Structure formats: C-alpha cells, structure tokens
Image (cartoon, rainbow, N blue to C red; front, side, top):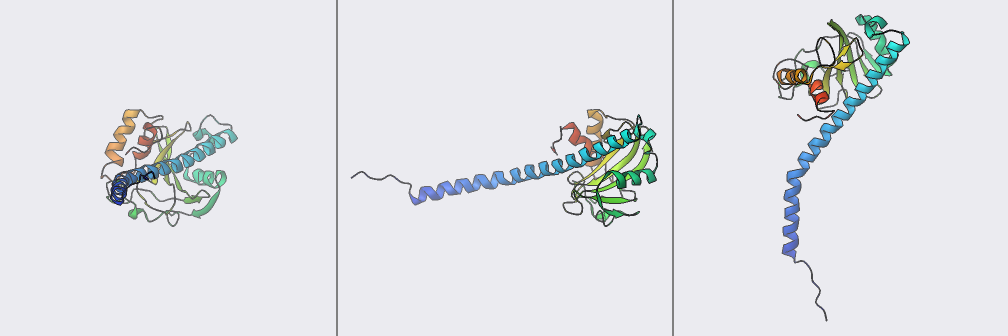
Length: 218
C-alpha cells in the first residue's frame, strides 16, 4: 500500500507560529491605515456637502461670490447653516453639547488643544458631524469651519477627527491664508508649525490632507 504523506504536528505548530508572528507585525499597521482612511472618507463627505451648500447659496442669490451673496456676518452664517443643512441639533452660542468640551481635545503630539475655538452657534448634522461656522474675515477669507467628523465620538484629536477649514469668498475651502488656493509649500509650512507642533493652534491639518491628495500620511 502507498504511504500517505502528511505534515507532522511539529511542522504545523511551527507554521502557525510563523503566521502568528507575521500577523502580529502587520495587522496593527493595516488597522491604523484603515482607520486613517476612514477619517479621510468622513472628512471628504463633510467637505463635499459644505462645498455644494456654498455653491447653492451663491447661485440662489445670483451672486458672483459669497460675500456679495450675503455671507458677511455671523448672523448670516447662522442662517446659512440652518437653511442649507439638515440640522438635528443646534447649540446656541455654545460648542457643547454639539462638541465635547474644547479643553478635552488633544493634538497628535498628545498635548491638550486648549481654548483654540471661539464660541458661537454650533450644529450637529444628520450625518453625525458637528459643525461650527465662524465669521472671521481676513483678506479673501470670510470664515472658519470647525468640524468634528464624528461628533462626540473619539478619538477627539486634531488632525484625526477634528479639523479647521477656511472658507473664502470665491467659494473655495482650504487651510488658512489671505486667498485660496494655497500653495503646497504654504500648506506644508502650516502643517509643520501648527498641526504637527505642540502650539495651541488648530490649523495645518486640512491643508496637509489636500497636499497628499486626500490621504492621511501623517
């Protein structure tokens, strides 16, 4: 009779051990990459929703830019949010409970992001994202958007689920500056000096994602 060939128990155990070691080395990296992409996907959805709302607003007003359309005061920005988004919660003159307490947000470096946001009306959208639209004109910039893409859910870290985006009168959304679009060098500089640093600044993360073609490489 022919003898049947098979693996010995020792060979099976060695193989399983190798698979376990390889998995332990690669799975955490894969999970981190997946989580980063999940954050970017959610951010992109909010970005698209806001961009389309700004375009509708400008077209509805038959204007050549957002300032001419009427986004020239905090009251108008509050009205814009209420009229052009499906809002499920409004926090009048407050960040909470639409956002978590701002002093509990952290930066990628681990330091606390303390008192980085001016308080005004904030909103929770049907998508679950929390938004605060602040009138803050400077050059062609008309306002700042603070967005927590998943609301009060964690990790509540700037550059992961929390971002600050500038809105310009030409309808563009970018990192902070006098006009948009910003150059790649300017965005990288903002990332290094703000997002990636221990400074109490909430800028620089969004521009880095734009530079890297909607990927979170940091």
